Image (cartoon, rainbow, N blue to C red; front, side, top):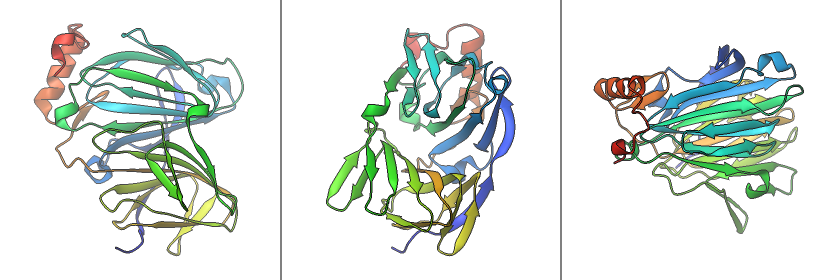
Length: 286
């Protein structure tokens, strides 16, 4: 198959969430079927504590997974299962909400710079009601790969093959086989990375300007890629971007706030369970 090209460029939109936290909503609440298996991508970036100090107090989820990745700064996760972990600069948190979780994500700092991302990854119907779980992944567990032309790739999930070497991210084994890489490409350098043709592929350019197959894209842009194999990216300036990919689920999506299921009745059930205080009961686990 041919190289992947740009199908669509979606600009990030400023908004707020949690207790008044200022974020950029990159994707979410539109075109979810087109973004399969991903549901949402938020970026939080500020040097002002007033923009993030309120954090994300306790709130529920059901039916998907969340991946929080901190480039700079620290957040603390707590949940109803008793998990308590701090995500520091360069680290990540992988949480499977499954049948139900109630958690909080609060800043571990009162001032200074904070920059991170949260991705929502969908689950197939057969896995939506599995038991909730949490994993704290510190920076040293995430492979950092450098190429001969100065490109640096942090491999959070999936396998990256460079030359004769293959690097595996700390997250693997999910049905969608997610790929999640953070790429740093120096100005005027080109990076070609292979991607399984079964996967849907996306990029989020959060700094700099790049070109893909002669299409120039500027920062704060989410890029939906065509089908294909290799992705060739040229950095017109120093560029930083996320690469997300995974096997599409191809199932109906029903969502309401923190719940993502397959139909409206399952959403109503999740809302009833939360209102009645039974969202996290073990009897829901499939």
